[in-house]
Length: 264
View 1 (cartoon, rainbow, N blue to C red):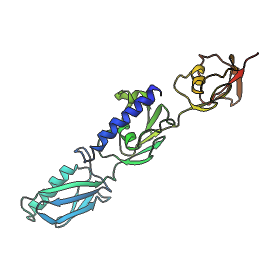
View 2 (cartoon, rainbow, N blue to C red):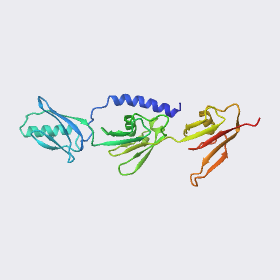
View 3 (cartoon, rainbow, N blue to C red):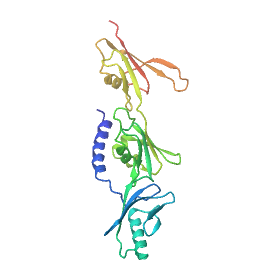
View 4 (cartoon, rainbow, N blue to C red):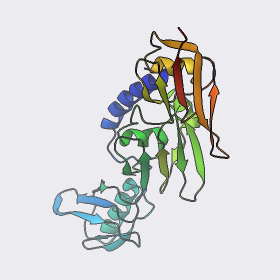
């Protein structure tokens, strides 16, 4: 297993533990249209209700009608409802609780090579690694070493996943409402001829011909290290060319490595 894959597995284990204990709405979450909240008033169970924030940013509550809450934290919404119930002489010294039941106003999409692609609620100020963890983590053998955060305004931020999982904060950008995190499929190469396990393999970063042969199980007894060729497509013309390579030459995406028999 490569160092990158090992780091990924360790990160997912740690983040999963953290995520399992972090479901309550934090103070920095701001209510928005579509959010569903449960409102309760101490010693007044008959007033317990669930209400969804309207498109205009209001909550409707018994006795006080519509209350503008868009952009407020749950704690600030509690204070506002308490104020209106008290000032209106409906419930003196009211104690109101607001709990977010369904986060709908702030969503981030996580797409590509993750276990559970889809939209995820942005329940707090968060970063790319947290959202990837919510999506179940990377598909281990399929995900590339690089991803992208596409902002709602169309701009994009590249992410070096290897550095991100190693703890580099510059490669773990904050994500915002409407963003999309995309993890592409890892590049591949093909290896055939006199190797133990011919087939298609994941192309690791800076992979050499020797490492590609090792991924294919190594050479057979009939193989010749001097007769290794690569069929490679020219990115500009699209034409293919067959060239001889040495063990320490780099393999490129979609290369077809062919190991020939030696002369006996």
